[in-house]
Amino acid sequence: MSTVLTIAVLVLVAIAIWQMTKIFELSQVKAEITQVANDKDNKYNGYLLFAFLVFIYLITIFCFWKYSKFILPEAASEHGGEYDSLLLWSFVIIFIVQTITQALLHYFGYKYRGEKGRKALFFADNDRLEFIWTIIPVIVLAGLILWGLYTWTNIMDINEDDDPLIVELYAQQFNWTARYGGGDNVLGDANVRMIDIDKANVLGLDESDPNAADDIIVKELHLPVGRKVNFKMRSQDVLHSAYMPHFRAQMNCVPGMITEFSFTPTITTAEMRLKPEIVDKVNRTNAIRAERAANGEPNSDPWEFDYVLLCNKICGKSHYNMQMKIIVETEEEYNEWIASQQTFGDLMASMK
Ligand SMILES: [Cu+2]
View 1 (tube, rainbow, N blue to C red):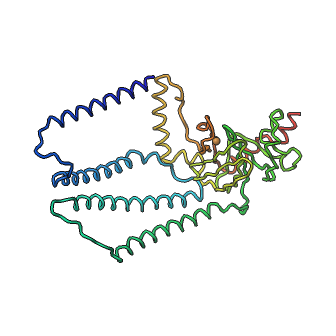
View 2 (view 1 turned 60 degrees about the horizontal axis):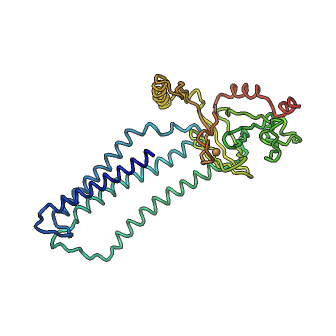
């Protein structure tokens, strides 16, 4: 209701201003009433172009200064650096080109403004100019595209070389479950039709498959640093997307099929927490949370940095909260953790 009232008030105010402008215009005695712009108008608009140019430059500088701290920290995966430099160079090129072309655009707008008696020059074409402004973008874009394709092929080359750790990421509205292949590093067969909630077979593992017995199902993803991980994604219900921003990784999870992504984590959670940009981010967040705590508001516990797996497809009303903690640790820590987890076989035996 208050929204409707606010809109109504705004509309009425706008109408009032419009009417007042009309009265003001009528009250002005004008020597010459014409819709055609004269030299003075054109010059005035030319200066306004410069003002707008200054405005877009200033707002760009302001955004760099104010929002740079919100970008992701250093990539925590092997391929992440390559991905980041591709992105950085694309932005650098776009930034330089747009800075120069905006200046030229606004300057020419001013320089060739309308003037009484000035006639536009008829200029059919200029082969050399056409050649320059075609060939330069062609070379630059072809370079970026080829580099992009090369990077993409590298990142998406999912193979079983170097003994990767096999992990399944299982998406459903609205949570993630991870499954490790266990001692044999082979995932047992699974199918949504075999899900049996009463027996806690939440991922629909085939109990008769010997590979499934040692599988380990968890709600927190642990990864050993420096070891390649091959993820196999499944979805139970709708399209989800496994997004691990710190590792520059994302892959859709599609019901009825298995999608894959592979990366090698390079920075442990403990090491990442010591990076200056992370320390800074944690301090900033905790300052806000301390303020909330002082006001007795919820969501005010001190926060500690952790890698996360997020869902990056709007999959339903609790999509925003669909996440899982990822812990990258040393191989010893990982081995100790995985050894303490219950296998699927043990879980089934305990349910009998
Ligand atoms: Cu989702």
